[in-house]
Image (cartoon, rainbow, N blue to C red; front, side, top):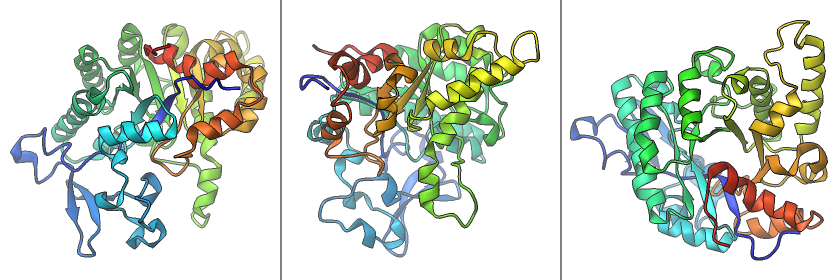
Length: 380
């Protein structure tokens, strides 16, 4: 079971960027095109970036207790209808205390999970400035509120690998602990991980000893069956995005070229890992070295054990399959303030999930694996 004094580390939460993140950091001449909050005729607040309108959906925020989220027009939330912990770092720390979470790593929201909203902007110069402004916000404002409990992760200008490397090096002195990347860049119109296009980035990430974090949906495409399928189908299939990334990275050859690189698969769960390891092993035997080009030389299980990490919010089957998944390869996430999370009962739910797990293993899942992967000093 999870000891009561374990300081939990969530490796996948989200920051709802406040309305002045870019206005406070970009020159005045960009203020009519950079991301900013505007009010629609119906009183709803939305983001506007260049000509694009982006709402803050009720599905990605926690509303105040007195707000009926189901009654909000068009499913859009105003900032004064959200819990301040969505967008204010001091209030976030208070919500973490309520939820029993000690430290948090946050993916962006408006920028999309790998920062790839700026990939599709009309003005690439503006896109780079917006990327840098977000990273400065995370390192100098959000995480600076409590550097011991808030884990900074960078987004990168994915349209130019040299710019991505430069941005990572710019941020390294600011103490970033991870970089976000797309689970499938090919869907974004970028080179796949099966090319050497990204090698300069992997070399730089390895040099800085940072993990690469890939959140489901960071390719802007979540799995579904048809255009008529309800949203429940997409939610049920969340894990398939991580399964694709898992197979891609296992057979990409990246870990052979960069043997100290680590990759984290966020919000895809982990109960599917035993099946995917079995399928990867069969594929490797059929197409492996000496037969056909499998994409990797080491056994898939060896690659997985050394380089890949999965995360769970609630995943009872993953816990039942720890002998196959490996307790050293599993981390925990609260997903605040998204709907998939368990706020304000995240700790209680995790304690129940890990009730039959040996204490040392429960602590690895809830704290120690994250502390090791992200190099976090946790007071004991």
